[in-house]
Image 1 (cartoon, rainbow, N blue to C red):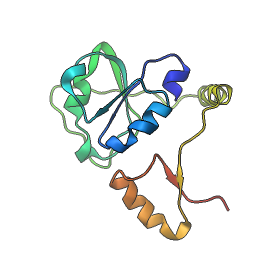
Image 2 (tube, one colour; image 1 turned 30 degrees about the vertical axis):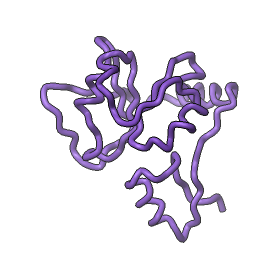
Image 3 (cartoon, rainbow, N blue to C red; image 1 turned 60 degrees about the vertical axis):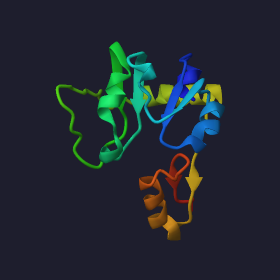
Length: 144
């Protein structure tokens, strides 16, 4: 949603084909199950939200990034990432001004979080669902 809000053409890659309809509702112009090599290298910017190291096909992800493009990993994988002859960098967390600008953009464009609320008694099931990629798209306990 943020990508399209700032004018980017968004392609979504997912292991779960059931997410295509949601991806398109969020503004994606293209949806691919898994990482296809048809795109290599064609993206200026790739944002990875994969947080399970063993499921992160880093070599395939990097191969989609165009020359002088950027790969940004916004999730902390659960284990060491191993890849040969490559480097990855990330940015600082920023100042208050940056997230305030992002929140203002969300308010201006009507962007809201997509989440799945689960009862406190099922938190363990929620964690397992995240590990198994069965969550749409974040899971959280209810507000008190």
